[in-house]
Length: 123
Image (cartoon, rainbow, N blue to C red; front, side, top):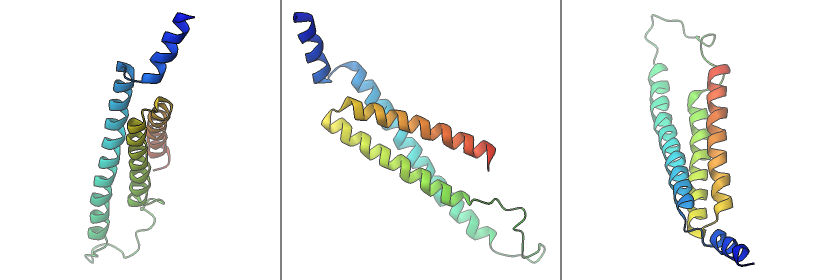
């Protein structure tokens, strides 16, 4: 009975190293991905505005060579998703909710994998 109570108390405190490592990993990964996607959004929006200036040496309609999905829209969607996961992981860190933190880490990794697959196959 004493071993059960010790295990139960250990899981309730969440002051162990595992919680700290998971929280730091989740915050760093989600924060970096949100920052990098918003940075790429700014760069891609700037490049799209510069590319819309016609020089006269190219035809006005180059829609055949353009991708179907604009990169700035994707960067905005990914940036918002990663920013929401970052804020949710901050909330779970403040509440010391390990299950929500595991969910945030899992979703961050899954969105990264889906993003990689979409970028390699569709775009």
